[in-house]
Image 1 (tube, rainbow, N blue to C red):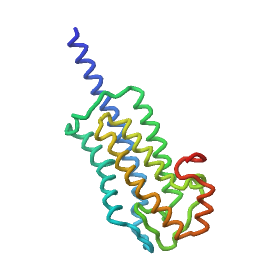
Image 2 (image 1 turned 180 degrees about the horizontal axis):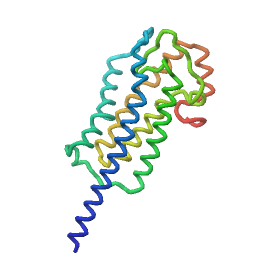
Image 3 (image 1 turned 135 degrees about the vertical axis):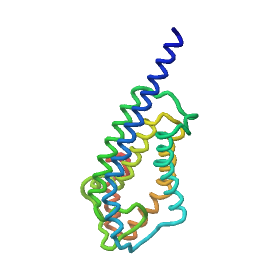
Length: 208
C-alpha cells in the first residue's frame, strides 16, 4: 500500500513538472517571437555610437547560457536532474502570472522603442529619446520585463541550476550595464535625459 502511494506521488510530481516545463516553453517561445521582427529591423540600423566592450560580450554570453541553454537542457534532457526539487503547487500559478506580465511589457517596450531598440549598448543614426508609452514612468521597462522573465524561469523550472541561472546571469549583466547605459544616454541627450531621469524611475513606476 505504501509502495503504491509512493509510485502515485512520484507520477503526480513528474506530471506536475512536465506541465511547468510546457508552460515555461510557451512563454519562452512567445518572448522570442515578440523580439524576432525587431531584431531583423535592428540589423538595418546604422550605428553611430558603439559601447560594446569585451566585458559586455562575455556577460551577454553568460545571459544566453543562463536564460536559453541551461533551461532548454533541463526541459529536453535529464542532464540536470541531480538539482531537481519538488515544486510547490501554487508556485506554478505565480510563474505563469510573472511570465504573462513579462511578455506584455516585453512587447510594449519593443513597440514603443521601434527602431531605437538595440540588444547592446548602441546609439543608431537618428536615435530619439522615447518617453511615451511604458517609458513615461520607467526608463528601462525592457529590463523590468526580463527580470520578470527570469523570475518566471525560477518559478516554473523546479531545478536549482536551470531555474536560478537566468536570475544570476541577468543580475550580473544588469549590475555592470545599467550605469554605462544611462551615461551613454546622458552623453547623447544631455539635459533632456537628465530631466527624464528626474521624473521617472528605473524599473518600477513611482518606486524604484
